[in-house]
Amino acid sequence: MAHNHDDDEPTMSELWARVTPSNDLETRAEALKQISMRLALAEDYYGAVSAAQTLGQLYEEAGDVIEAGYAHCFAGLQFMASEDYEDAQKEFRAAVDSFENSISDTGLAEALRNLGFAYKATGDHNRAIDSWHSAIRILESTGENTAAGVLRLEIGERQISNSQHELAIESFVSANQLFEGVSDLLGVGRAQQRIGKALVALGRADEAVARLDIAVSMFSYLEEKHRIMFAKLDLGRAHLAAGFLDSAYNIFEEVAGEFKASGHHEANGDCQVHLAQISRDRGNLAQAEAQEKLARLIFSGCGAKAKVRTIDLAKAMRMVQSGDQFDAEELLSSLIAEVGECADSEDLREVSIQLANIYIGWKQPERGLQVLTQYQDFQGEWLFDQQIRWHNCHAAALIAMGRFADARPHLEKSIAVDKGDVAPAEVAMAYELLAATMDGSQGAGRAAVIGQSVAYYLQAGDAVSAKRVSAALMPESPQRALGYIREADGQLAFLFDSSSSGEQ
Image (cartoon, rainbow, N blue to C red; front, side, top):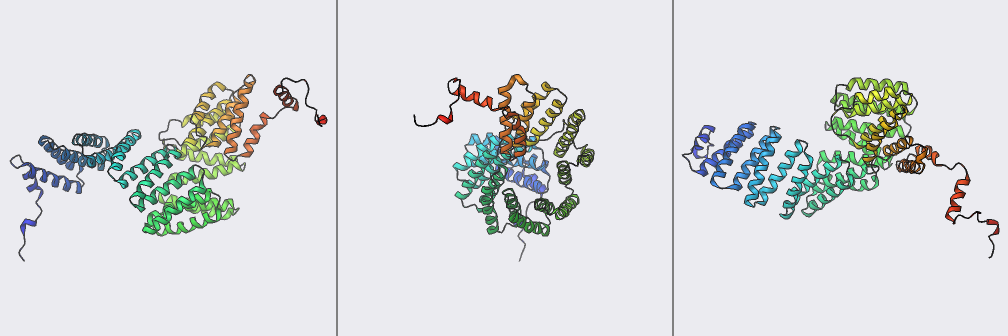
C-alpha cells in the first residue's frame, strides 16, 4: 500500500513557515496552536508561552476575544508548569477580561478557576478563594457540578488550615451535595473523608466514624486502592479519638501492612506511631517502645526528619510528665541544636516552648525567656494551639520575673485568638496566667477570669487543673455565702430558721 504523505505531521520548520503574514489567519492560528502544544509537551514552557502569546495577539487583532482568552489561559498554564506564578496570574487575568467581554461562561469559569490556583501558589489565599467563588457560581449555573465541587473542597481545605473547621464542614457538605447531584461517587468519597477529618478535629469523633465509613466504602466500590488506604488511616484515627481502642488498633495494623506492601513507607510509619500510642494506653510499654522505634526507623529511612523530631518531642514530653525533667531537658536541647538552622520549623517552635517551660519550672525564667526570644523570628504559618502556647509561655516567664505589665500583651494575644473550641486547654492556661497578673483590687474581675479558666479546663477534660485553679474561688467561710443570702432576701438581719418550718 502506498504511503500517504498527506497524513504526515508537519515539521516545526514547516509550522513556523505557516505563521508568516503571507498566510491567512486560520492557517497562522492553527500553526501557532500546534507549535505551542509541541513545545509544551517537550517541556519548553517559555517557548510555548511565546507561541501562545503570539496566537493571542493574532486573535485580538482579528477581534476574536474568545479564542484570545483561551490563548491567555494556555500561556498561564505554561507559566504555572514553570512555577512562574505571578506571570501566570497576569495571563489568567487577561483571559478573564477576554471572556467577560465575550460573555463566555465556560471560558470565564476556567480562567477564574486557574487564576485561583495561581493565587494559591503565591500564598494569596483570600484572592484565590474570591476567584474560586466566582467560578463556582458560574459552574453551578451551568450544571458543572464536579468542577464546582472540587473548588468547594479547595476552599474547605483552606478553612481547615485556618482552624475554621465548622466553616470547612459547610464547604465539604456543599461539595458533597454537588457530587451527589451528578452521581460523582469519587467526589462523594472525597467530601465524606474531609467531613470526617474535620469532625475529628472538632472532637466529634463518633460522628466522624460514620462519615469515614462511607468514604472507605465508596473508594472500595470504585477500587481506588490509594484512596482506600488513606481513608482507612483517617478512619483509624477517628476510632482512636472516639476511644474505640480495639477497633482502632485492628484498623491501623491492617492498613500498615497495606502501606508497606504498596511502598507508602511514611504512612506505614504513621500507623506505627498510632499503634504505639494504643499499646502505651493499654499498658503494653515494651510493645509501644518497639512500635515507636520502628516508626522512627521508617521516618529516618524516608528522610521525614520532622516526624522523627515529633517522636523525640513526644518522648521528651513523657519524660516531663513522669518527673524526669533532666533527661527531657537534655533531649530537647539536642533537638534545638539539630533544627537550629531551620528557621521555619514548626518543631523548633514546640521544642523551644517545652524547653522554656522546664526552665520556668526550675525557677529559671530568664533562661526560659532567652530560649523563646532566640527562636521567635521563624517563618511559616502558626497552628492556633501552638500560637497560644507560645504566648502563654512568654507570659509565664515574665510573670515569674514579676514583669506583669509585659506579660499582659502576650495574654491578650492568646485570648484574642478565640480558639477555646479547638484549643480549650491552652486558652484555660491563658486565663489562669491572666488572673496571676491581677491584684486584690480587681476582686470581682479576677474571680470571673478564674471562672473562665476553670470552665475551659473542664471543657478540655482536665479536671485536675480545674480543681487546682478553682481553689482560688473557694469561700473562706460560710459567712460570706450567708451574707449573700441576706442581701438577696432584702437585707434581712436574720436567716430563715429551718426549725420553725411548720404550718403557718
